[in-house]
Amino acid sequence: MRNTTLITCILLSSLAMAQANPFAVHARPFMNPAANHIVFKGDSSAWAMWHEALDRAVFAGEGQVSVVHIGGSHVQADMWTMQLRHRMQSMSPGMRAAKGFVFPYNMAKSNNPWWYKPEFTGKWTALRNVHAPENSTLGMAGISATTLDTLTELKVTFREDIHPGYSFDRVRVLHRMDSSYQVFAWSADSTLRIERRVDEFRGFTEFTYDRHSDTLRLRIQRTDSTQRSFTLYGIELGTGDPGVVLHPLGVNGASTASWLRCMRFSEELALLHPDLVILSIGINDAHDPDFSGARYEANYRELIRRIRIANPKAAILLTTNTDSYVKRRFVNKNAGAVRDAMLRLSSSEGVGVWDTWGVMGGEGSIRAWEKAGLAKADRVHLNRNGYELLGDLLYGALMEAYGNHLKLTSR
Image: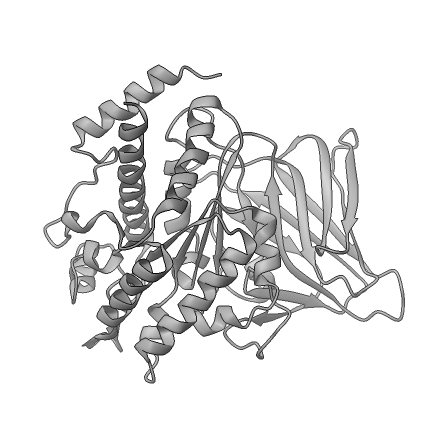
C-alpha cells in the first residue's frame, strides 16, 4: 500500500499552487489557457469510474489504467500521445506500466513513431481504413499488413531518445485466424523461457515471458501449403505491473467514415479494457470538400456506440480539431462545425470535450503556432515541439478534472 495521505496532500498542494491545474503550461500570447478544461454538457458518471481507476493505481498501487487514443496522422506519429503517456506515467511513483499497442507502420510503407524501431524481412502489402472497402476485416488499428512469404521475421526494439525505453513480459499478436500460418516468439537469450498460447476465438497469439525483455522477436511461418497469406493487425506489449498504459491507434488521413469501415473494431478494442477513450478524429472530415456537419455527428455517434460495445463503462473524451488551413491559404471554416457537433454529443451521449481548437487560440491560430516553431509549413500538422505542448495541455486539463474529483473525495 502506498502512503495515501501523503500522495493526496502532494496532489492537492499542486492543485492549489497551480490554481486548480496541477500541470500549468507556460502560456503563449496566441493561446487561450482559459479554454483548457474538460467540458461536460450531459451525464459525466462514466468519468467517476475513470477517476476511481486512477485512484486505485495512484494510492493503492493496484491495477492497470488503460487509455486509448484514436485519430489520424496526429496520433499515428505518437508524439502527442507519447507526451501524454509520459506525463500520466510520471504523475506519481510506479505508474509506468507498459508501452501498450504498437504497429510496424514501416512494414505498411508508412511513417513509424520514433520511439520504437521495427525491422522485418519479407514482402508486405498494406490495407488502411482510408482506402478499405466497406465492412473490411480491419480492427482497432485501422491498418493491416499482409505477406505471402512462407517465412518472415519481425524485430521491435525501443529507442531512448527523450523517454526511457520499455520492457514487457506479455505479448499479444493480433492476426487473421483463418490461416495455418503460425507465429512464434524467440529470444537471442537462450535462458529466457517463452510460453505460447493461441486464442482463435478472439484472434491472437499470446506469449508469456518468464522475465522482462526489451526486444521483441517474432517468426511468422507458413505450415500448410494450401494457405497463401498471413495478415497482421497489430501487437500489444504488456506487463503485469500496475499503472497507466496509453495505446495510440492512428492512421494517416483517417476520418470518422474510415474508422466505421473497421468491422473488428469493437471486439479488438475490448482486449485493451479501456478506462478512457480519447477520440481525435475530425481534421480529415473537415478537409473534405463535401463535409456535412450532420453526417459527421452521426458517424461520431456510431463510433461512440461501438466503443461502448467494447466497454460500456469507459469514459470517452472528444478533442476538437487543431486549427488548420486549406492549401496553406484559406482558414478551414469547418473547425467550428466540428466543435459544435462535439458539444451536442457531449449533451446527448454523456462524453467529455476538450476544445483543442479553442486552446490553440481559435480560428487562424495555426499561423501563430507556425511562426513560433510549433507547426509545420502545411498549416495542418504540428511538429514535435507542438505535439508535445498539446500533450502537456491535454494532461493539464485531465489532471484538473481529476483534481476536482480528489477534492470531493478527500473531504
